Length: 192
Length: 400
Image (cartoon, rainbow over all chains, first blue to last red; front, top):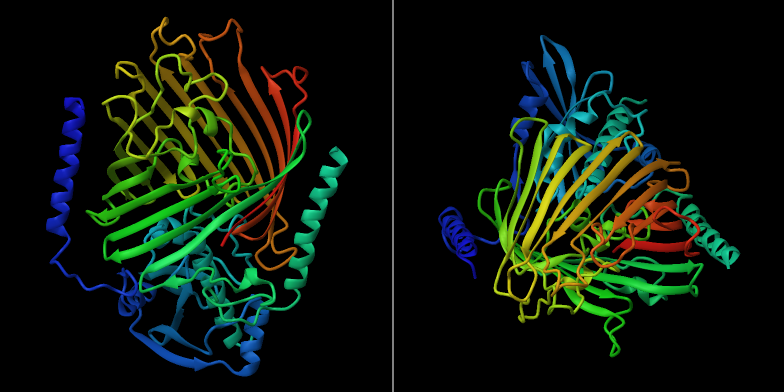
């Protein structure tokens, strides 16, 4: 082995030793999911309603008719029958609404908040909890900003109006499906 | 024969469309996540197997397969079970992960050596600085060109891999290796991906044994991973820097360098450039690679001194959701070129180019599954007349 090769291996070994210092105490508890929490619900609501003086959160159970209408528009089944809608107010005026969605990525659920304006256009998508070991790019603004301005009338499809992230297709599909679901739910609850 | 191939193609696409259309008649009523549960007709044993089964607390099973029919003008038509690749993924603890792919190729290992059953990837990842820096060790995919890193058949829109990614970059190219990798976002929306490894290196074989050849490039020169090492005492180095200024646009620079000969004197350096650009329903992608091979004119007479090649590909996606929710068609055109003896060291021939233009159409009932129909125009030094070797290739590929 040449001397240069030896140096490289030494650098690698030193990196690992450094990692041992970072990795925390031995016996770190095993988690069911390897979670990365980027935003709490309170933090996501602050981003969704930055100037609001009040945020109301109301849990809604879908009527059978609403559920059927939502599933028909989406083309797939809902896994739950309730949704919590957060609505911000400033000086008594509504500042849009937000819902927290949870969609399966490659293996595990991705939790994120979708904020829509009063007229049903996406204003923000913020990933709150990511549990996959790859594909976390979907939490970055460079990915989520492409949802801005989307409505239920947009296709919201990979390779059509949403750019895919190579190597994270299933996470992209999950977030895209969740945004579409959030918009359809909000519109259906409005009776539209 | 051509008519047979066309009929087979239409039959395959028709079967896909027909069954998909039936499936798309009514909204699905099943829970959103059915992985690990039995679905489909129980009488057909295939569907009772535990696909996507989560095993234990943090281990997952998945994989992909592809199967093809090939009808080449100068050869007999054939079916082939090309690949079946189960993969296992494990979250061992926070910041510690293991992943492996076990490849059964050409029907699996046989006594006469016509198939393969082997590890293709088996690596332990250890986060050092979150997403920014990690250590990876084990059997590692070499970061040489983007295609080698993302080569799964269900992702590719054509049946055959690019020629340059089989010969100059001998995909699937993996080596026992250790190194560092990570992703950084120095300024939104810029993204940098980087990998750097120390690895075993190529095995060019004994002088004159012909493992590096102008017929198939560097494929035979991949070293064994069974502990016998390569043919010298030197290590190899490889790395890739990927740069994405905005979502949908990326460029990658990569290299692999190390000594290939018995004495450990002659260096083989491969440089690669890959790129990709997406706009609405269109994708443009490609890769260029150049291999410079040190050689002694007398001892390495059969070894070409330099080889290079490229591919450029355009994809257009259309008819989204036309057949069923989530389905899409894709039209593809790809141009391949390689010259595996660029400096004419092994023959008097002034040009050794192999070219291919492929026209493809594929149907994806959902993103993970593809039915592909390709027609290949094969050329030698851009001449259509030298060999009659055009081909129809029909294939199916899916993640499971």
